[in-house]
Length: 178
Image 1 (cartoon, rainbow, N blue to C red):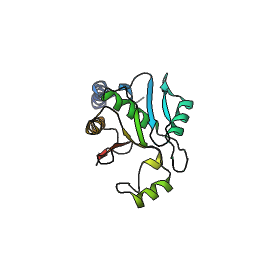
Image 2: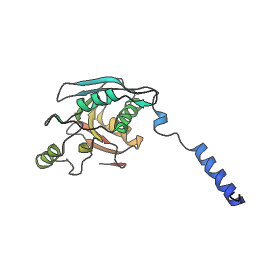
Image 3: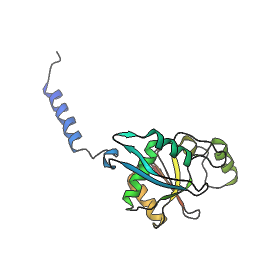
Image 4: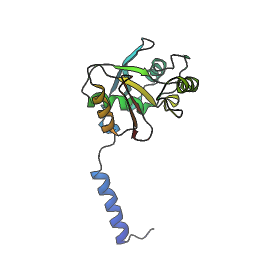
């Protein structure tokens, strides 16, 4: 049996106290049932459904999100990071909007990303889009700066502000902004 010393007891107590006063986890701040409303401006397709309920992501809904967020140039699909969908739910809540997100770009194949790097400014070679961890959006009725600021306050990943192209990029990579 391990010897309990005063130092171990204090360390255990400090750990318990820090856990008790720590801020809620990001997931704990989300609704018990998570719905998304997205419209892909390139395909005209929409997703308006529950993708998470009863403590689980819903496989059929996640498959539908994969389809709606596919690379419209190559028609290829890829797994979408569920945390990205959670980020959108939190962002929409922070913006107090019931409008649908307009999706400019979801998943991009590496071939599409490479082509865009050659032909378009502002596209990163090491983009999170080919990993299914990024989305470019706008939210009708909300100023683009307000969408950017709300995403920055969430501190859940990268945030890019593309005023001239009329969208905000959010991803689930490291926290950073441009």
